[in-house]
Image 1: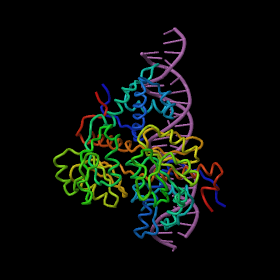
Image 2 (image 1 turned 135 degrees about the horizontal axis):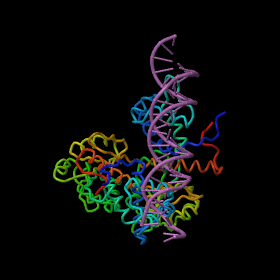
Image 3 (image 1 turned 90 degrees about the vertical axis):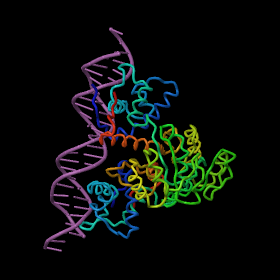
Image 4 (image 1 turned 180 degrees about the horizontal axis):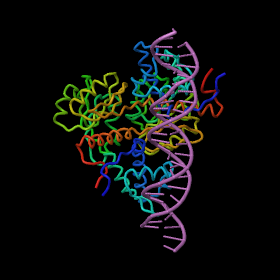
Length: 223
Length: 223
DNA sequence: TAGATTGTTAATCGATTAACAATC
DNA sequence: TAGATTGTTAATCGATTAACAATC
């Protein structure tokens, strides 16, 4: 009998979506099995790491053969919880809210956007990706009558934490936060804070570092 | 004399934008100095880690007093290369491209969006955030006549790597990629690949894990 | 069988935490 | 000065890589 519960390290979890994406692509290309060595080449990882990572999910490999792509995809999907569809609401129908509402890959991974809310009367009633923007004042009733798994907070002011608390009180257990102030996870609610600017800032650092190494700029630590 | 070049670990670099954000906020609240202990409480890190991290940038603390917020902000900004403004172009004026074009925090960190391109004739000529969408065919001339530091790829098809290569040939050295296929960094070009779905997927995993721990669901590893 | 490749243990490497002398 | 807090070294912890017996 298999182990009932095995804690998977967060570092591994954070790599799983990328495995999933590459494996989906390989499967689409008609590749039905792959060795850790070849997958490592494609993904620019080490074969050793891939075997260690996949072993956290169970034993799927076949000695002398490799891993079956479709089986791996299935297991990763199940581990990540994207094998079942989940209902999502968006709070904030600004540009980012609209972009996420129309983001096809969400649906592909089982996230169904079932409603979008805003507080701006000029925006309420607009159609965004086949959904009519609702008044955020009506969210209580909506959440009571619909099973909502995830709330996406897409407002641009500092009220994210307040909105998150409201959603938590309504029973929403997961928050995907795009608003500028970090939302702290609590006993009731899981959070992923997204700050797009961080990734661009890191790019900026690396660009500068490259310029220093290439001798185009003088130094990193000044004076 | 100070060291001319000190390699900062990537793990530290990836935390710097978050330090920057919190310190900016503290400064806005009128806090002009802070100890590693207090900053650790606010940011939910350990004081020890903060001191280690900041020491990678130099020695700024004052014994018995702490760190000056504004000095720290300045040093982090310089390290990350956001102390100077950088010119950015966006390729792809779809919803995500538009959202990024209107994303105020980019400007705040010194990233100036100087142009936005698309290949769709229906979109070319539209005004997005005070910029007229240009025909992507005209990008060569534009880049030759303007200093462009970063290219943001916001297309939704699989042509990201091709677009990136074109930009690299035009001399753009940094790519911020939102398109679905990973762009591989090369000798000429630095890349940050962004896959928003990954962060939502991790949220999904954590939600599931929480449900298992709370006894609302049976198991993580099936069968 | 022989070749390929896994699963897993051991070795290495790096990152985080703890501790404390130095010092403002 | 006494109290607070840094900078830094040492200890711990965890993640990655290497190695190889097991096995298809």
